[in-house]
Image (cartoon, rainbow, N blue to C red):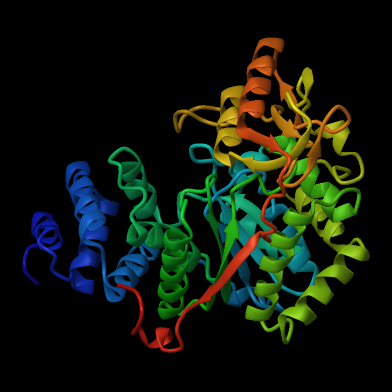
Length: 454
């Protein structure tokens, strides 16, 4: 084999050539063992950003990154159901993972969900879990396997063993303005999912002002890339494009969103948009895992699991098995941290919400301390918003825009101003648009590695 020269791979991609699977594999191996420098990785990311990748290149890149670390194999555990997962591209007020994982487990699936921290204005599932006292969000793999086997689900953070090449390349992309490259996003997300040993995956690709993919067209492109590359790599995958022009749920902020998820599981409170997306994604998982014949049957099974309290029971078991309080579901206020200052925020005029800047609300949570401006920053799990008004809601003296939870009075007042600025209140009716915009799936020939992604 000839000597490997990373610069020649970079040159070929820079000039628009299609890279071979061998060249991509050697480049990713070099990322993992240090043979590829940060400068070379940055040049590769930039060349890919401008030149793109064919389907074959995307599959090769994804598979090489998945092979860069530990690959989980669940066959030795003799599980009596499929291994399924869901992943979101990030949004505001979206704690659906905390509802979906236990509900799918209650319906016969096994869900080893490996989640991430918040990025920019979006909230991260891992940060929400860290708001639960004692919860081990990054256990060792033996504990992870045991909890999945015994409970049916475990929602944790990425370990150092899974797809280490992705971790290094993502850090470089983050500081070189190449995060938005669809081939690189595809490989980043799917490499971890392939390494997790799944039987089926459902992607939630967010679209709108509060999403990384602001337009429907770019969200559709990403959804198609994810579904096609995953299926061509042997992982059956479907994707839903969902709306993020307003927060998905009425709470935003780590502890507040955990409470919101518990409330849905127990039936104490349900937001229609939040529930629709959670149940649509969970239904896709059941159909992919052949636990339901069709989406109607899947929705019926999920509704029954909710009504019987089985989703709430699985969530409680998962929390306890990973070190959290045994009675979190029964007494969330006893355990979840609470901010010392709350402030109810009213609109300056009475009327209906006709528009909402979801990204601005996410940034307001960050400004409260509930998100990060640098990767190494901690977050304050207590802060955020609850009772957020939705588009078409009537707001006035009895119906606020939301309630701020803050560490002090000054930050509460600033957040109140940001919240008012994020909403447009008027007399007209907003368009009636459901939160699930489209379903996307791989073409029928994707499993043979051909077709549709350029």
